Image (cartoon, rainbow, N blue to C red):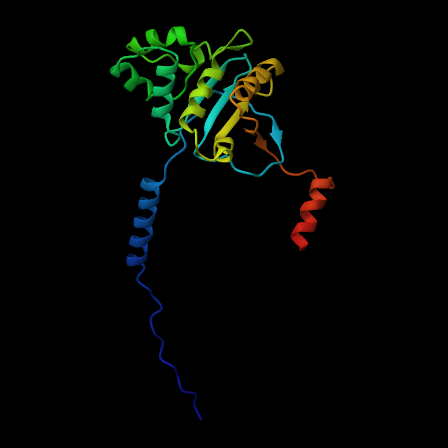
Length: 218
């Protein structure tokens, strides 16, 4: 008895609609994703095995290998209020135009006596040409900035403020500069902060490695 032949059907599938959806999604993610801007200050941080990511909402203190100190106030950290408080408490008497310009700068890295002239300049001074915020024992201006930070966040959860403060130091920065930064924080009763490091894998066989293995088994 002859076998019944099964009629062959076309296996062609029209992928046009699926490709359109895929390209639409790709376009959406490209346009909606906030790209991380290139860093103005090149700092080579020490490495550590910590895997905890730094929060987007942060107040960043940067130490360069030359010993310069910079402050970056994130847009979501009451930046405008901090600058207004600093202008008032330090008696800078900045004009409305100067304050508006000041609130748009990315890095704060000049002594108080050079702020006005820099804000009146037609071109912004590049970060690598700035003097940095003075932090020596006789004139620690970073402590004034941190005082304005604590003034603005007064009455709120202190732990939240401590989580926001990040210190990012170059691996070649000298310890006395780091100590002066700590003194600026300590003088404003900020005793905890986070240090930004370059992540690396936990060394195999170390105690931390073994602890991680045990936690994974649980």
